[in-house]
Structures are given as C-alpha cells and as structure tokens.
Image (tube, rainbow, N blue to C red):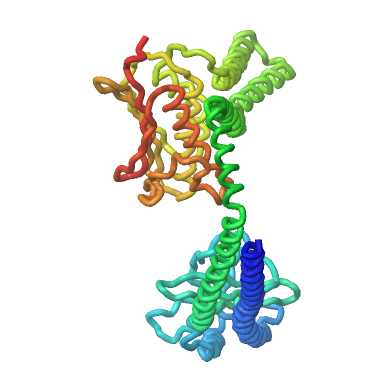
Length: 494
C-alpha cells in the first residue's frame, strides 16, 4: 500500500511539472505569435506609409497642373510638362521601387487603362503616351479609380514578391488619375522567413513537451488502472462479438439510406440548375408567342386580320406552346424516381439530357459534339444514368468557363466492345492534375472550393454507376483534357 501511495505521489509530481512546463511553453508561444504578427504588420505598414507619403507628394505636385482641366489633355498639349513630370517621377525609382506610373481611363466604363506618365528612364522599357494596357487584378484597379482611397495588392514576378500601390489623384472630390508604384517586399519576406524559422523551433518545443505530458499521463493511467482496463476491454470484446452481426447489418442499412439521401440532395441541386436552363429555353418561344399575339391584336384593330393570317399566327402560337409543354415533360421525366430497371439506351439518355442543357451551354459559346456509335439497348435505371451524364457535362462546362477556354467544346461519344457498352464525356479544358486525379471520386473532395463545391457530385456518380448499375466510372487525361467513361456490361441486354 505504501509503495502504491509513493508511486502515486511521484507520478502526480511529474505530471504537475509537465503541466507547468507545457503551460509555460504555450504562453511563451502565444506571446511570440502576437509579437511576430506585430513585427510583420509594423514592417509592412511602415513600407506602405512611406509609399503613401511618396504618392501624396507626387499627387500634390501633379494636381497644381490640373486645376480645373483634364490631365490627359494638358499632357497631350504640353510635352515639356510631360517630360518634366516624368523626370520628377524617375527620381523615386530605386532598386526597391521598380516602376512609377500615372495612369487614367479614357472613360469610366473602359476595361483598359492608359499611361499618361512613365518614370522609366530606359527608352526600350518606356511606355508610349496614352498606351493602353489591361492590368492584373483589374477589380482592385477599378476600385481605386472609381473611389478616392488608396488600394494595394501583392503579386509575384518570377521568384520576387512585389506590392503594387495605387493612389488616386483627386480633384474636386473626383479621381482624375492613379499614381502607380511597384515596390519589392524582399526585406519584408526576409523578416517573415526568419520569424517562420523561429516559429518552427517553438512549435517543435511545444510538440516535445506535449508528448512528454501525454506520456506521463498515459503512464500514470496505465500503471494504476491496467487491471480494470483489461477487464473492461474483455467485457467490451464479448459484447462486441455478440452485437457484431447486428451492427454490421444496421450500418449497411444506414449507409444505403445515406447514399439515397445524398443522391436526392444532388438531384435537388441539379434541379436548381436545370430550372435556370429551362427558363433560358423558354425565353425565345415566349417572345415569339408574345410577338404573334401582338400581331393578331394589331391587325384586328386595323381591320386587316384576314382568315389566312389568323390561322398562320395561331398555328405558330400553338407550336410554340407545344415546345414549352415538351420542355416541362422532359424536366418532369428527368426527376421521376427509378425503383425498377427499365429499357433504355445511351442515345435516349443523352437526348433527354441535351434537351434540357444544350441550349444553355451553347449560349455560353461552348460547342457540344456527339459521336454516337452505340444503339445497344439494356436494362438499368435511366434517370440515375441521366443524373450522372448531366453531372459530367456540367463539370466540363464549369472547367471550360473557369479557365476561360477559347473555342471550348464538350464531346459525348458512345461505342461498344465485345463485352461492354461505353459512354464518354470529354472536353478541351486541359485535364485534371496528376497529383489529384486519383482522388476526384473521393467523398467531399472538390476542386471547386472557391465556388462552394461539395465534393459529392463525382462520388455519387461513381456510387450510382458501380453500386446501382454494376458498371464502372473511370477518368483519364488525353491531349486536350479529361475523359470520363461510363462502362456497362452487355449482359444486361434486353
């Protein structure tokens, strides 16, 4: 008993010491993080303040030449003033301050800026007066030009990090032009790098003491409670052995139910997109109906509505109305739940999907090509297959829009082999990076995090094809982009 009490005292003492050391390191680390942030912010702030001071002086020296006129017109008609001001700008160019410009816009709605003053002394590098250009981070440039406050942003040029500083030249409460200065953040980066290395040392110390702390806790707990834990584990094992079969079956049911819920959620998400597509398809027929009815009304008022014209216009209205009704039928059919397998073919599935999405996609200047060489009929779940095909097409559309691909296209191909029927959806979006291509079917893995991607689309598509339809869903890259393949066995032929 005395040995046990002695062991408890020693263990508690070591635990208290470990806790005190751990808390000390944590407090020191928190203090260091706050100090590090303060140093980084102060260093960057001092550089911004210095740049602000420079641009304010430049702005003041330029404003006195504007008065109530326009800087562009003044400089255009006074080359000596232009040269004098550019020499003044050149005085501020150093190793750290690379470029000093004064720019404006021909009109507020223009997407390009024009250079009014260039402080560069090298003739080969110097920009022409009123030379147009489209800057990077155009939104920040527009914000600075339309407001009266300074704006700045970081960007990389090779291995170097630069800060672009935009200071409006304001006259009578309105921005006349922007003073643009690029300055290097090399000193700032060096400070951040050194602090980061020190931060890593602190983190290593913190991890070391955390490990010691938990080792002591584990030793104390294991040494004093070993027998009780052993008995508890044995009882748990017996209980688990009796309940294992029930739990496995229950988990499988939950998993299947969860998959169905996620499929339904995915369908609801697609439904929102498809409603937008249907609205796009309805615009032209509705406009035509409105035009035809207006023509009938006008001719009737002018007593020029003859029988043949009335029949012609009413026939057009009827045809447009049937088209609207057909679109609704396609939409309703797409979301009917499939509880039993039915006869279908790749051609029917593709046609049904394209009836809904083709117009909206081609309206975004994306071509859809079809190479359909398989009319094989089989039994499956058509609406679930449509959901997969729609998801693959929408993924291709998203990548083409995100990357702003010129002459973008989506190609849908079908063909058959001796044993399989294959549907492929490909595009010229550049493909999937090799370091993530093996993960894109994983649940919650998404390349669209900036666009609220859930990472469930391809996961559920793979679940539908491989678990429900007993096929395979694969992906690979060709020379233009990604190719998704739906592969079904021929044994399900009707």
